[in-house]
Image (cartoon, rainbow, N blue to C red; front, top):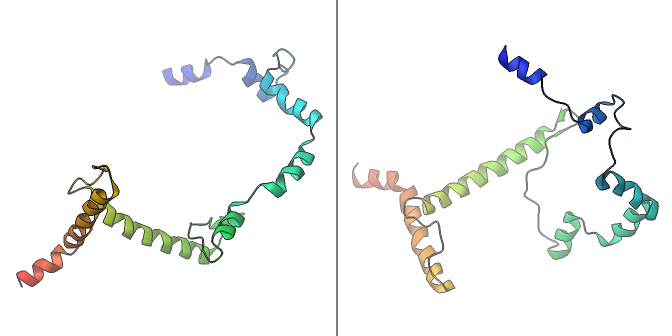
Length: 153
């Protein structure tokens, strides 16, 4: 009962009333943010501006293709468009997620047990040496159950 009263007694600002279309639009002073799109559209029409900028704006796919023509995009794609689920795309995205989860698990094993969460030293050689020590330790940790079976049958 008390919660219901609190939500109904909330004050309404002029901006909220203007959004609801209750006739308060004339009472509220237009801000610079309200006036800016109209002013810009009078100076340079939006369609003309977009047509002028479009040739110089590289789309992400075109940029990727220009830098590495044989590279493939392995990011997950939307599987539902207009309420229709694309099963093939769904399976592809699931497969990518499974591979990513397997790889990220290895990095979690490297970071947590031996505290390899931060770069400790200045210089690439020392940090590389530290990584070269961590990766075999992670392999041993991930295979420890199979190794223990061989030691204790």
